Length: 173
Length: 218
Image (cartoon, rainbow over all chains, first blue to last red; front, side):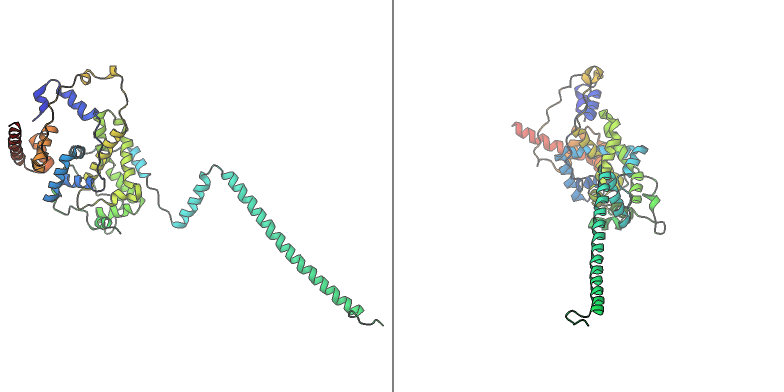
């Protein structure tokens, strides 16, 4: 079965290792949604006869997929040791803690401000804008109340003048 | 809810009477730390919560299956002398799994294959792509072992077999026995059939090939 055995038994080992390990593998053009599941199903023996036949024909035409199948079979047969803690920590960190919508919005705003390099400048501009708006509002209110006060004083003065001197056009005794 | 998500929540076992897995399933219950509902948690339920973005389900998944992914990645990288990249490639697998709102995991169907088998396939294809993408760093020729510098023996030229000559199974048997250098028993295990069936298919394939090439030679 082994072609290399017939060629030169003494030289086969390094070359076999070299071919398996160091050689550049072909690019795997697996559609990860469908093909990887079909390969896994093939390994688990859950494909129906027709699907198996189709996959086997496909494997003959796609040696890179056959590579994946054989490597996966060997990996599963060997079993798995423990994974490094660093990998588990990094992988866990890929999905963040979920927050309530309001908290999430608040944190997002906070993150935005915290992450920006112009945080101090932004805060200063916010302060200046708020101060200008406040000054405008206060000025408007003061001006409005001042106008009303002036009109009232004028009315009162006219009334008192009329009481003392009579209405305009009336003869003084 | 997508069909895949419904499938996830419906079942956790093999739907079609699968034979026992090649690799050992982990002995503890998947995502056990996040289980609920009268102490019975199915894989489908766990995955449904996972693809919904639940942090605890993701953490449980990582803790449960990191070793499966890491072992598959490392097994492929070690012969290439790049075992130190195993952490990064395994992380790449996890990134792939949770990217695009867990698209890959959403399309996983527990009724078709075991999760550990499917993850092993994903890990292997990711590793092969990684090796392909990043060419091996140059090594000083003096640092290479003598055996690697030997001249490659001249391999026989690969014969061209007409595509319709052999049945798919016969073609796969020939591929596994000759190109992949598997023993009959190993090929039988890969294909999930009896070794005697492999021998029979091998024989029939050789008869066909012999007839074809004799005819071709006139």
